[in-house]
Length: 164
Image (cartoon, rainbow, N blue to C red; front, side, top):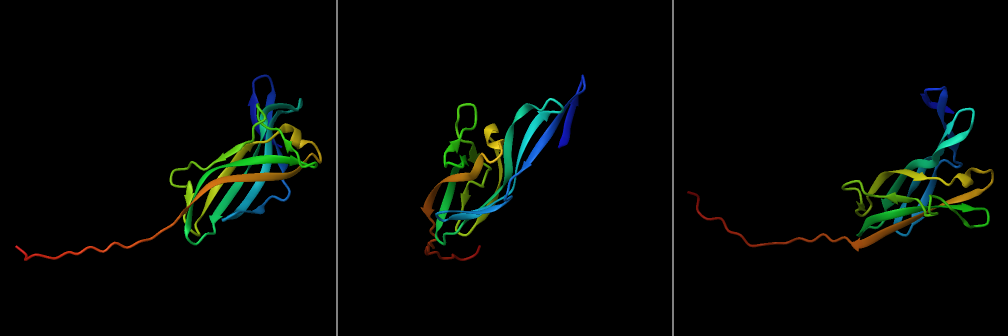
């Protein structure tokens, strides 16, 4: 645990870090491939009382690559689902909605053919998934729009007049 902050009255807030095993994995979805890496879950707790101060968060890095030779991909969003041993989704968020990964960095919401990009992964993690043997797998659902990539040449006739 790492001390995050001390408050008046002797209250200390700590980051409780849970490693994710494996810490990285290869992902593939249609024409998109990549890697999720540096995965960990961090929860802020009050030292001594183990009272949760802020909800757990799953963080890491997401590298995506467009493997198509002739199609551009516009990334819309990704959804992270937490799956238990019975194959059921473990609820997360106040309303039980799935955490969303947004690809909104300016100029980084699309991938041209054979291009890759790195995105931070930082989503809310359901507290009940921290229980031993509760979480079996993570599911990343990607929403993207493929479009044909075309390169064309336009020729136009010109002439040069006499210099003045």
